[in-house]
Length: 481
Ligand SMILES: Cc1cc2nc3c(=O)[nH]c(=O)nc-3n(C[C@H](O)[C@H](O)[C@H](O)COP(=O)(O)OP(=O)(O)OC[C@H]3O[C@@H](n4cnc5c(N)ncnc54)[C@H](O)[C@@H]3O)c2cc1C
Ligand code: SF4
Image 1 (tube, rainbow, N blue to C red):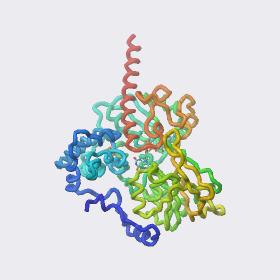
Image 2 (cartoon, rainbow, N blue to C red):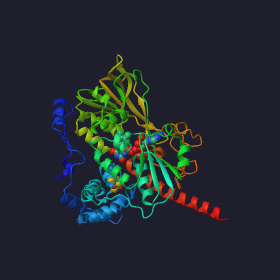
Image 3 (cartoon, helix red, strand yellow):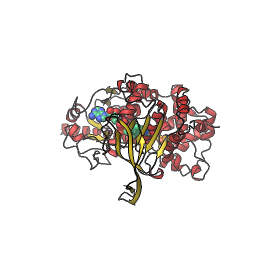
Image 4 (cartoon, protein in one colour):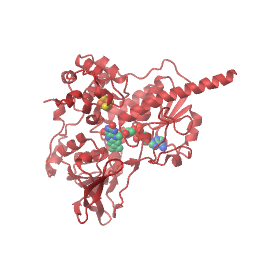
């Protein structure tokens, strides 16, 4: 059986002992289980080279997929790596965590014909992991160093992709991040079982070796204002993501053991990275031995339920107000969670949290999906008298994220935002309402994907380069007059 089919152990829904035993044996077969060279070549060889590369069109960075599949099928892995790295700064990361079922693989012609997609993501991962093993992945060496510098706020995929592209062009690049590690949500949001942290850390080292400088534990708005960064750099890129967690309005929501998803996932990731995490050690952010209820239906919710299973929760339930077909998360993630024993409670919303200072349960009501709203999505309506209780001793709120109030945080009232609080940019130049200040990634799109942040970071690097060149040409012309 191909490794991809062997990744997950199916666990029964109400079998905590089995689940705990599985955890002890580290029995989960994770997404990073290896492809052998033969298997990768066999899979890559399934590409029909159809001539209408819908996969490439639907890949946000427009990877030249048919070409590198062909090279991989022929065993020409170094060339395959070069082709794949030409359009993507972190191919091994996208290979692991892109929702391929909605992007490249979902649009594979072979999949459409009912024969099962070419496993593009796994092959991309295999090619780049091999490149790392073989020493083909090298720090960027610009042909010449330029005096101009660019400041980047945020060391997530958007900021890092821009940093690498700008360094390639010779700019001095400094990345500021309020966290103590490089990677943004790739390091503290996405769980280790989907994206192993050494994979992110080696990219951070490569960028440092390329000459990118990092100011960590540096929060813009606290340690410097946007205006100060504008004075220090020829251009500034804001790639600071979206971090304001959406709240639930329900009685009892302030009880102990009702926690935000990102606090829960960050604690787990920090623990995995070897940090001291008192809130995990005290049990507050550890699901072991607990009845866990996760509220939400996106990828963050899926990461929470799957983390809770791995931590040894006695039961894990996911409460979502719409049905399976209307979940925002990847269907693949939902299937994985189900295989691992997570119980989904569809069409249900929390009405109140039960307990006495500490949560002991969730009172939920059944939901009916009504007429579609302006966006085309059916509006959830609570059904009167339909409530029921679910036992819980840890509730995780995973309802999504909105941007922080950046004009206030950066003391930059001229920084224009949309009605959702995301940064307004000119989509041609990627520039915000402030001259020389650009933006990329989630802070522009709202919560999105790593691969889109990479695409945005690359695009912004290109327009920043043009901006600086034009500006210095104008300065030179004025000086010559
Ligand atoms: C739990 C979770 C799971 C996800 N799983 C997936 C997945 O499987 N696949 C996928 O493609 N996408 C996934 N995503 C989405 C993906 O992680 C994001 O779309 C992507 O990381 C956005 O990149 P970014 O560079 O815009 O921002 P981020 O990755 O959020 O990075 C922003 C950085 O800016 C820093 N920052 C913020 N404010 C400041 C400030 N004032 N000063 C200095 N630094 C600041 C932050 O510390 C952070 O490091 C997931 C998201 C979450 C929350
Ligand atoms: S970057 Fe993502 S969408 Fe593009 S080919 Fe790779 S896995 Fe598919």
